[in-house]
Length: 419
Image 1 (cartoon, rainbow, N blue to C red):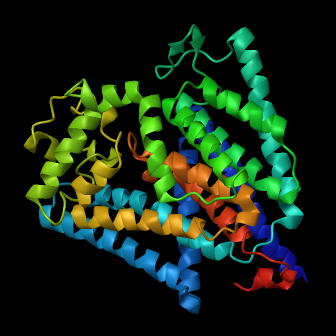
Image 2: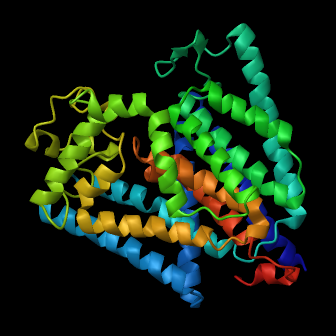
């Protein structure tokens, strides 16, 4: 019995650590301890070790084999591209490789780790943690509106006379992705009878007040798809997502024009077009790790930018490289090649298929899981979404949401099956 209590507490404890780690990571890193910014890397390493442990035991579903093979293709493409070109130091290449496998490690490790975890007795406790954080955030929002306690940062802007909300974080985008995770957890916990409508409304309001087009667009998609799931009892399909794309494009037309149409030297457009040139020149591989579109291609500055004539563009030059990592798919194509890009799309499709295993009787769990994946997909059009820190924490809770729908009155002793 003691062994059972210990292992069940570890699984719940890891969720709480992930929750508060995500909420505090950016704030603590910027204000107190820079090393705290590595908590997402540590979490990914933990779940990677868990996945390797399960592989050693021989407990392997066909799904994990498929995902593992796709990740292996991506990794081998990255390594071969790097060896063939040898543009950047090995240290940068290793960091870039790890950044790209963090999310797959979380997904594979989490699906194993939480496969027999029954959250029933911990649901309200987890809900209380989320509600506490929401109360603190909303109180800070009210105080900031009246007393302006958080000074302007370089990433803030004004809209309709109001300052974009960022609270304790360095960027409004960070607040928006944290609030989205909190919202998805509360939606998920509705399946366990945890009531949280007021808290959900507060989180939605704070996300809107960040004035971030990606998060507002995501909320719109979630709302529409929630109607499909709850009212019509239908699952979210690729076809339904494609139908929504024109409406999303209309909603985000100003951003799309700014990023890809009106300004021919816009960083994202330039990175996208250049990635196509690199993929064609180095087919079927890419330029290699830490060479294009990643944060690790900045110091030292990758020669690829000069070779393809984009090193003089604002936001991509050596002295103004703040836009270099503002894409994801062009980074994969440019660094790893067309084969890796196809494999990564296949990897995302596998996530979609796993989410579809959630039963429609668990529609709140289904919506919660889709909420996180939708944001990552939307964000991947204009930032390095799948390698960002938030993808690690999103991945942890996505695996919880997916696995919880598969638990049906199992004996608590099964919680220790992995040991």
